[in-house]
Image (cartoon, rainbow, N blue to C red):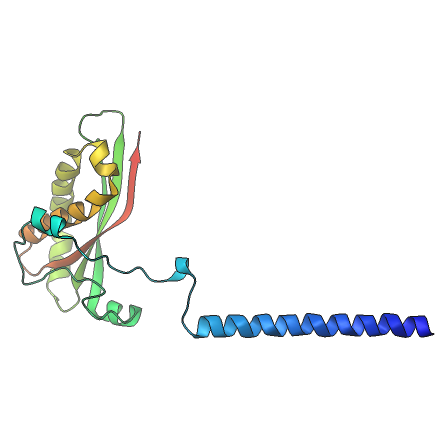
Length: 185
């Protein structure tokens, strides 16, 4: 009988320790995520400050609608963003980079605009083939090395924004995003 009480006591102690571990783990995760300290891969991306060398490469043509950055606009979450901005997909751009006939480059370009520009969405839709044509010409002049260089992506965004804004009458786009950016050799 004494032997069974020892086994029961050991089993009770193990159950109590296991329940305490589960409770402690739950409390730890509750306070970790409730306090807003998310793991690194789940934190929202912050806009990088622009460097002097990048801003001196491309002149600003139209300062009425400068590109918005999250840090400058007081970005406070997706609710404000979706209320103030909208996206338009220009579509897929597929080209052979300059100097090669075997490699190809594919990108899907999204442009951002202010929702307050009510007359802009129909113009974006109507001019989408023109935008794709201009971007096809732009990307086909770039080499594989230029396309692979990550530092050039900001230059590509600025150039595409300038190209599109120069074609618009009813408003301006505020940013350019690459939904995909693939080089296949």
